[in-house]
Image (cartoon, rainbow, N blue to C red; front, side, top):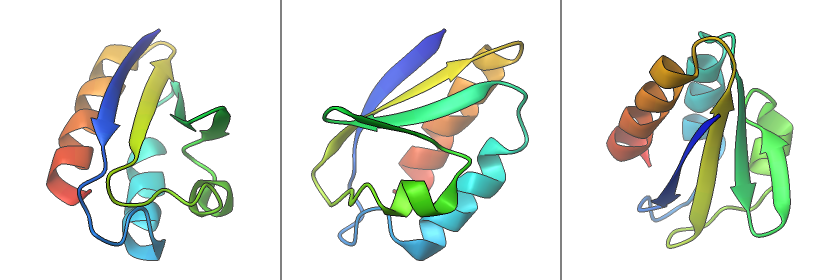
Length: 85
């Protein structure tokens, strides 16, 4: 299992467009990828659950990948976050 923390920089937080792009990115991997904010954990492949977290600018989230391609998945998730959120 691999994970990293990230502070959201997008002033709108995780809203519809980046959430949709994130789900599309997550589905490229076999690993289970989750996002945690506070005590709430959701699968990053579930768009409505992701948007329902209410992640805002300045929030710290933890992204975890667990599975066969977790190294590549976590590397790609870090790059995605830095480039989009």
